[in-house]
Length: 320
Image (tube, rainbow, N blue to C red):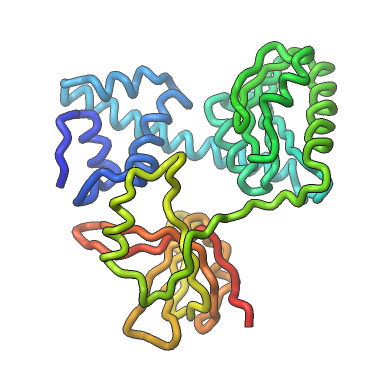
């Protein structure tokens, strides 16, 4: 196991189940970074700074617990805003090319997370506004086909401030009249720019695999390409006609999906699939059904156990 001399980081790793082996990009990106990031989103970024620079074990223990509480609060707030936003959005017609939602006094630090979730779900540029008196503060996320900051530049006379890059932005509007004018103009720009396009997210698959081709040697080879991230995406694989042997939900409120599958009748080569936020699929799947999946290949380590993990990115019932 790799060691770290940073006391604060060590305490975070204890909380989030540090695995044997190296600190890879997935572990850092999905377990450590969100907790550090949560400090600035729901409290103050100085908390994370003090935690990562302190050598006082008692203080570090206090700060890491506060950080963990901030992260839980951040998750709860994001889910609440997302739920309210989805209720506003309702059914999204094909001709609707952008989304704008607004709520009363939503926390600025998390509205961007909700905007990202909505943009991913509906594959449309999305702005999430917090309304506070005569002020409207928003965070936005976009898609490859639409430069959201360029659109804001074309609305600059209605904005008190704005900034960002083609895929994400922030802005402030003063006054209900300016807000209504901005909505009309922004939606018009999106309709014009995205006219005729079918706005659906796409997945770039690297290669199709059979279950029998998945091995520890393949995982070791993939690990040699670390770290994964922007400009070096984790490979995505496609496997078809998998037979469901077991299916269940796991996690809080059955949010996640866990499936045991075989292929071509080979019950000596079973694999577990995990689908985070795919729990709703459990009601649609039965033992004996066949599915096609797009997945990331990795390792799951828990309480000293180590097994290959197929993390579902997308799935569908197999064509007959």
